[in-house]
View 1 (cartoon, rainbow, N blue to C red):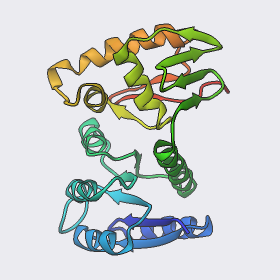
View 2: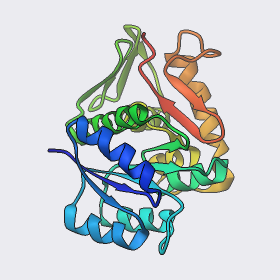
View 3: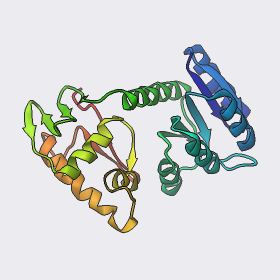
View 4: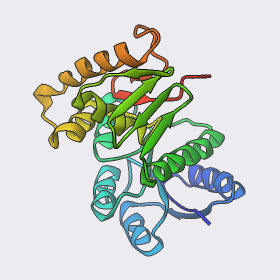
Length: 229
């Protein structure tokens, strides 16, 4: 059974999310502060963590840092913080998704399932990756097809597209994408990612001005989605 750890200091929220996840078939553990969260994390080894950013004893961002040092468990941030800086900070630490309060418990269940699917896809062999019916990446040959047509990408463009295609739907900040292709995130060069994204869109999108696949998440970064529907 898939194990989920909920970390939040609001009992009503914990009960609501726990009940919905348990009904959906998940094995749920809960913690109300940062210290208990890290102890449970080490003992339970959850498959996914739902983590509030505002916690007693140890702040949620520090909890996320500690969890990231221990491994690659998927993390969904659950927070009332709506400022762009907070969302970006959490994503930069490696959070896989974020949900702002108030929220729908059904939405949380859907997000959990989506993040787990992305994590499983990222861990699977990826000789060929498909994003919907339109985009196909042949990884060993560094070839891309869009709508059945061969697309010529530069090495950097291919690596950017591949990084996002391995976890479709995940939001990546510019710094994360820059780190993926250059091994370091340098703030002064983050806008170079925008230029690469513009070029990729020109090559894979039917209408680059209204992209179906490579979408902008305003104030955060980019994500690659199945836009065939």
